[in-house]
Length: 368
Ligand code: GDP
Ligand code: MN
Image (tube, rainbow, N blue to C red; front, side, top):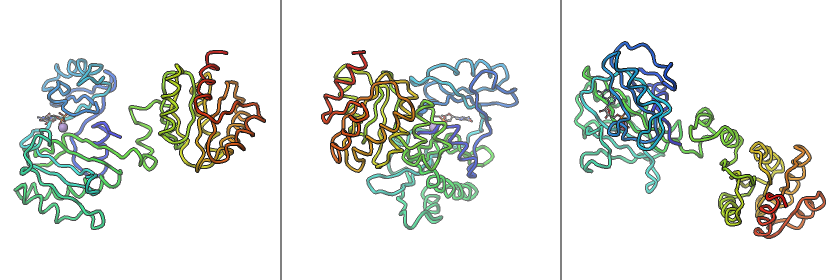
């Protein structure tokens, strides 16, 4: 998950990396009295805002409101701007670059640093970049920072700040399960202070159960998706009216595809995951029901999750929630006969083949 700059900077601030003073603006009334020159920055999940007019430099009181008005609600790089970060303007002497990222080929964290910051790192010649893989077993150590300092030829006063910053940045990289923490530009101010003028933090989405506070603010998710993710399900809301419960991301995707092929419109993606538990099935129904589908289609290939467990979950959920919508089920794999038997006894349509279930669900939804 990609974090907005203001959230990345919150993490930096909390963990001792210097960032400019600033505040968030979501509506015009949030704008505070002008006291000193500020930078008004569009909060979008793309870089290159500077070059695309997404950042305004405000040097007088009269310019503040117009800057906010022109950015809030506008589009920058094709993305709608709903939040702005208003920050004290920094006096920039030099722009540098530093990041820790996950090098997937080497399976190690990687430090990149260069004194040529402010531009995209990809555009720089390799020999300008200090690059070092970090052995995860050895961990990060100050000698790495010393090597970086030497390579970058930083003067002693800056070098000391840089070494301390690097250690904190690596701590953040680990603590927040990041794929990337990037400061570009890392600024040397006129007074010789290091400060993070930008923040790019990408967290591993699979670690969000450890960082619930960020899960709740993922700007790209609906409230129901956040609730479902918080309860441990992969769940995506869609625009149709057939609720879908399946197991495994691949089978769930295939179910959506097959539904669409038969002119059915899925209301959601819900992957039960691979746990053999009646409660997980019941809980999944709770979520899908909240999306108000007209029909519910369950498509299970029994393996770790056994078909009779799912069948029992469906029967229990029907009782518990008094489900009125038609439920159409496909059960195949481990304990499929037992599962279908349980469902039939309880008046639920059960098929062994996927296309029959899908065709039935689409017909049911049509009111037949
Ligand atoms: P990006 O273009 O989306 O990566 O946004 P950045 O936050 O990196 O800002 C782009 C550029 O705007 C920086 O490289 C700086 O040159 C400039 N900039 C950002 N903040 C300040 C500031 O406080 N003072 C000054 N003078 N320039 C700034
Ligand atoms: Mn930047």
